[in-house]
Length: 111
Length: 111
Image 1 (cartoon, rainbow over the protein chains, first blue to last red):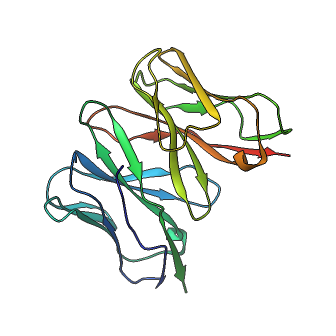
Image 2: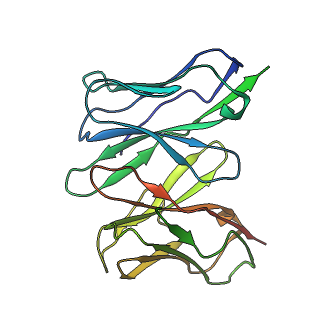
Image 3: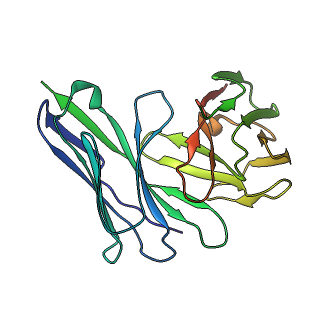
């Protein structure tokens, strides 16, 4: 099956920028999702990359390199409410819709 | 607004009981998924379905079964609940070209 790696935990300061990396196996790739999950809640969608490059959405940006099997989520102007887990998910659409998640990166934003 | 509704937010069941978790969607998406989420292990796929009456095993199907008699409803069944099935259960739906949407989650405790 797909193996997705992302750091377990990160800490950053309010107002700063943080980058959360994600690597995956390149075979059968159709897209890469990022989700945010606050404790005790369901994941909510942040971004979707299909092509190489940077997708920007307000304070959040996501980058993809398909040849390297690499993505990152960039969070700017960090706020305390950004403290959450960030999940990288690989989408493979070969034949059927397969969505595989990494274990998530727990981000703590400190004053 | 997309609606993915899980039948219960919190559930407490006894060991050996048969447990039904229901998921209903209003988006007409063909793909539906059941995941469980445990600390340190991330989201793990139990079963998914890409059409009515069709089902595929995910990474951890042991001890579970599923039913999809209608397109909008996907049920997860614990044939004989055990304490190691205490977890957060998340239903998700998806279709090609868009992100997956999640239900609010069911926190199941087996005592």
